[in-house]
Length: 120
Image (cartoon, rainbow, N blue to C red; front, side, top):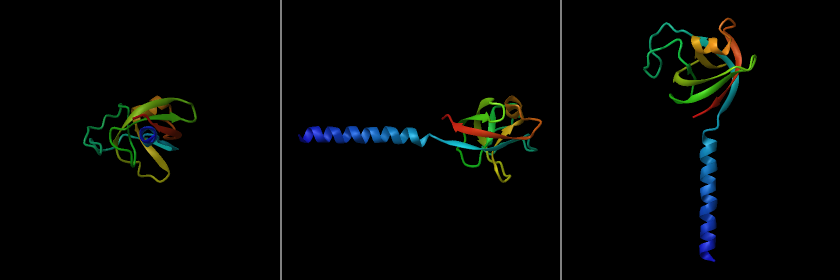
């Protein structure tokens, strides 16, 4: 009887850990996105700023995090890697490179509504 209870306990504990780990990666945020082609040559993590790369700036996500950015106005989406900090304008949740904004179709508008979802 003791072994059955112990095995059940460990099975429940293991399932809790697996669920907790998968939920730790869940992240979704909706708001305004803008694009930048900054005057500096370096991003906050020390990489060279490449205006055509699929990279972005976020206030708190760790560097190297990949997120899917979906333009809510036209449905286009793009996976970008976080390598910079920002945006520093109230109400904006992500800054994309000029190339990323072009691929999402909001280069002329400058700002658009998006949802971002963490991929890994």
